[in-house]
Image (cartoon, rainbow, N blue to C red; front, top):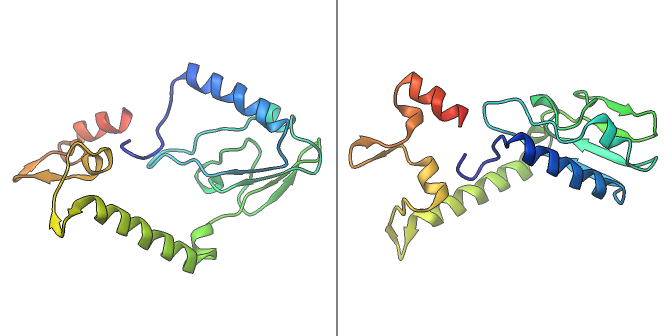
Length: 159
């Protein structure tokens, strides 16, 4: 995972849903963006949870192309639920906001490079979670399990 979302256990998901459901009762707009690299997007809002929103509320599911964070969302469609909540499923948002996406990507790269350079020198701090997760080799040795054997890659991906 290392800086990215990852799947959580069933108990964690249950507690998370309870807290989200309570918050939804006081919410008019929800934007969902949770993605797990290489996997289906996690379901964050069930139909029962969406039913807790007031009529006229809006949910934007930006993870819709990867399966969606919201039960009932559909790519490129606006779904109106029985209780009057709109679920919007815009697909491929980065291409719709290409200039903004490019600026965000550039800022992310600059922030990543700032982790690697201290006092104008390259310093790779392997204790840093992000560096550790993105480091492929060190001193000639493969240190990232995803670059090992296919079996190691499968094991790392399942964790």
